[in-house]
Length: 161
Image 1 (tube, rainbow, N blue to C red):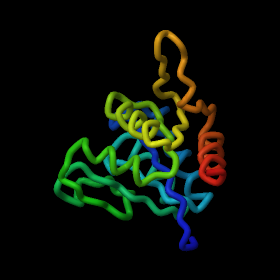
Image 2: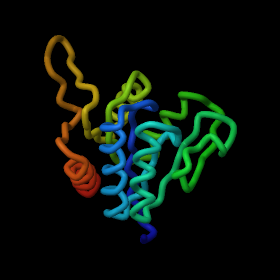
Image 3: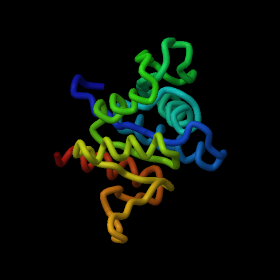
Image 4: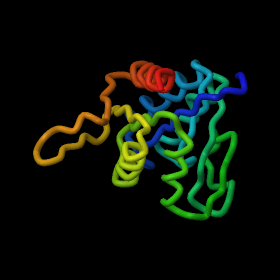
C-alpha cells in the first residue's frame, strides 16, 4: 500500500444471519483487493465478517471500539482503536471513512447512515435501510446488488471527489 490510503467504512448489524455474514465477508475481500483500508466498529456480525474477508486477502482493518479494552475487538481487527464512548463511536467510524457500505443493520446502522449523509460521505447500501421523506423516496443511499458492485461504487465515488 502507498501512503495515500483509501478508507472504506463497513457498517451493519452486530448479530446477522449467515447469508448476511457471507455478503459482508465478500465486501471485506473486495475492499482488500483494491488495497483500501476497512474501517468498522470492530465488534461482531457484519463488522467481524467484513474484517475476516479483508484479512483473508491481506487487507488492513481498523476497529473503532465502543468500550474500554482492545480485547473487545473481533479477531480480525488489526488496528483496534479504544474509545470508551459507546455508540458515540459511530461518528468516528463515519468521519474516518471516505465512503460507507451499509449491510443490513438496525438503528445503530441507521444513525451511521444519517451521520454519513449529513457529512456528504457517500453511502452504498446492500440489503439495508431505505429512506423516504414526505412519502417520497430519498435516493441518497445508493443501492448495490453485490459486494463487488458496492465496492466498485465506493471506489468510483471516492476517486471522483
